[in-house]
Length: 209
Image (tube, rainbow, N blue to C red; front, top):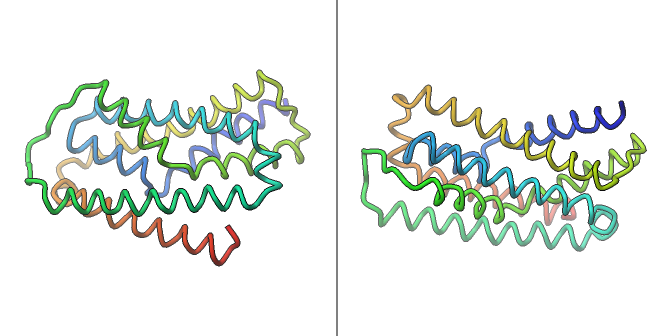
């Protein structure tokens, strides 16, 4: 019974963690509008697989990372650098790319790999799942056996995929009202990366990383 509660809570925590606009969900939304539902779906699958790996690593390293704030701080600093680079990339792309009104189709394999790459660059879920696994281990006296680690990671991946798929469905339904987002999507992404970079900087320097 305790195990089931932990899996449900992990699923809900992962689901809620992807609801606010971020690198992964906005990339999926952008892919949905610019390349179609199938491309966005494959990107969501690729991102969820990486989340599964990140959740597994987080559990295995939870005691070490939680007891070494320096490691957590390094993860945040790495994420900050990635966000700045991504901001520059989207800004550069927005300035120099030609505007396209039509939806450009892309291979499913490419979208899947894009999902893997974007989720890999997003290191922030690791501290998130470290905290979750630590809380569950202490509050619920949850034993992280091999089976429990696998099911914990699967719950996290399914929660992430659920939210990403909800983004796909939502953006498909409002596709006719997203002309501005389509046209200026790279600018939107650059602005989002800037906001996330500012938030991360605040966490590092004012909350002690």
